Every structure is written in structure tokens, then in C-alpha cells.
Length: 483
Image (tube, rainbow, N blue to C red; front, side):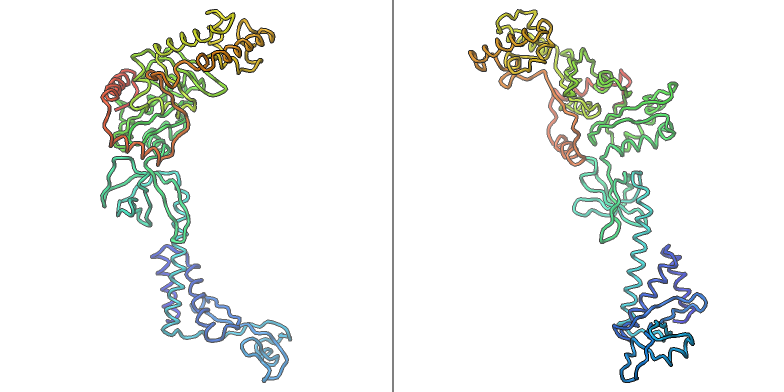
């Protein structure tokens, strides 16, 4: 290959593959070195450099300048002082002198090796280009074409490279065929031995938030902010929004004129219901909004354990809980509080049982029992095991002496009656209908997807279906976006 041909190859490869000229030249230099090493020996110190003026690769062999007999000379590593001074008059014994040597011709095996070296360099450069391009797009929504399914995972063609949409990150019930357009959230870009691996998701709450950012200009401009999002992919989601401009309604901005904005998001998520609620710094106000469309009668807050006991009217219980606990579960994830939903009838029954239980303590009448119950003690044992400093906070027992006396009398009841009067009302043996609890610990996307899939495969309970219907009607009435 002459100099002009070599230059054309460098330019063509760089243009076609989008690879820097320096990387291609480096690959060619390395290929020449590998062939030269075989010709001049493993001990030869060689360097190859591309000459921009001639368009050729110059090969240099570095030798040590010595003063020794020809018989003792290591030709691959040493050069006599006389020969060295012919090349460089200022050469001295002990110097390292670079001598230009003839580049070796490539035999069949050498050419194949050189080809592999060049291809590997080009491949590594392409992988680096792809990684650098997509690492900056992490957290964005990207679109590609479904190509094939590998072990249940969908391979998406993005043009320059492929991305993986794991089956656990596909919304339950979704099916894609080769050639389908697929939009997803780029969750991770990782380097591996096979090059950069791009991972997509359609089940992450971040995907939902990004979809709203694309649809709502106020979010892109920073006027409206999505504070938090809770999602059960394919079923239902809740987002809490807040506005930095008092003249801009954050919920209305996300809903859009005639609901067009939220409907575009729902359509992309294959009909997933979305509740948009105003965010509040006040936990009680926020929880009331999060449990909508159910109407809350009262809330009892336990700051220490971040728990709220929420009382609703009997006809609002199924609405507050939602189908299979979905509404209260999403509300708990959204607010970060443990939510205990209880009907008014159930609460009244529990209150009366607790007051009756506490009146077994000597000297405790109904009024004092109510005060003890309001302080958070539901049975005799709880009083017997409570610290004195906590008991002094109960009205009527504010002195340490009175608190000690109450505790001693409660212990006496427990010793005589055992567990008969020491259990909490509504214990394990009682019908728990009318109560529901949900913790804020969020599930990962895989668990949520599997749970949703199991729900879809199981038969819908008639009562739950009725609850969902009532919930939808109430949601439309209150202006919350569902279907």
C-alpha cells in the first residue's frame, strides 16, 4: 500500500465510522510494530510513527552505542560507536540511538494479525463514542425499534447501538412485536466486555415524571415541580405537584385543557390511571389529598412512629382503601407515613372495648379511662409496661406518685387476670373487617410488576370491583384524573 492509499484509508475509515484520525493512525502503528517485532526479534526496541509529510509509517530501532568487537556485538540491541557517529556525529558511548529501519512486508499471517489489531482498535473507539454519547443521556426518554426478544428481554434498536428493556421493566400486559416503536426511560449505561450496555425501563416512577415534563411546559420551565411520585405500573399512579408561582395551578397545569396533557401520558402508559394532587408541607393536609377521592373524618397522628390513624365513615372505607388496598398503599408511598385506615363503626367499637378494658384498673372510672386511651394506651398491659415519665403526661396522673400508683394497680390486674384483660381490642381472634394498614416502604419495579401481573391473572373480587367503580365516579366529581 503506497502513501496515498494509506492516507485515503485513514480518511475513509474516520469518515464512515466517526472515529478520530489519531485512533486509526495509532492502530496502524501498532500493527506495523507487531510485524516488525517478529522480524527483528523479541529483544529489539522498536517504535513506529506515522509521517504526515510522506504519508508513511516510519519504523525506528533503538540501539545502545557501545565500543566492542563485532564478534561481541548484539546487533538487535547494540551499535558500534563508529557506525553511530556516521548517523549522528555527536553520539557517545552509552547513548540510545534511534535507527530508521525498513518496515517489514506483511505476510498472510502478519496481515491477518494487523487486521485484527486495527479492527479491535476501531471497535474500542466506537464503543467509547457510544458510551460517551449515551452516558450524558442517562435519565432521558429515548425511542427505538423493537428487534427481537432474548430470554424474555426486549432488544431495542437505537440506530448506533442496541438497548435492553428487561421483562421486569415492561408494564404488565404490554406486548411488543419486532418492528414496533418503543419509548422508554434510560435508567443506566454500563461498560462491559461486550461494550456499553444500555438499560431501559417503562415501570419506573421516573419515567412517569419525565413524561409529564415532556407534556407540561410549566414543569420544563421550573414553575411547576413534581415533588414525589408513587406508582404501581399498569394500574395506578399518584403524583404530588407544587407551583412556585401562586398564579399557576400545578394540578391544572398537569391536567391541561380538557385533560389533554394527562391523557397523552395515560395513553403512553396503556391506560394507567393517574391521580394528580397538590403537595403540602403539612402532613395531615397532604395525607388527606393523597387519599382522595375518599373523604376523611379525622386523623390521629403519631409523630414518633410516623403513623397516622385515619377514621372514615363506613361508606367511605372501600373508597379510601381502594381495590386490593391500592389507594392507601400508594398514598403511604407518596407521603412516607404508615397509614392505618379504620371505619367509624370499627373505631367506636375499639374505643368502647378499650375503655371497658382500662376500667378494670382499680380507681379508674370511665372519664379517666378515656384520658388514658387518648394518651395511646389501649389495654391494661400497655399501662403496666409503660415508663413512669410517659404516664405522667396523662391528665389526672401528672405527678410521679400518681403515675406509680396507676402502674402498680395495672400490674396487679395483669398478675391476677393474665392475658384475659391485657390484650388489645380488635386482636387476632377478632374479625378485622373495617381496618387496613399500609406502610410507606416502596417496592422495587420488579416486585410491583410481578404483583400487578398476579392481580391481572386473578379474578377480580365483586366487592372490589364495586369499590373501584365508586372510586372512579368520586374521582371525576372531585376533578382528579383517573380514566
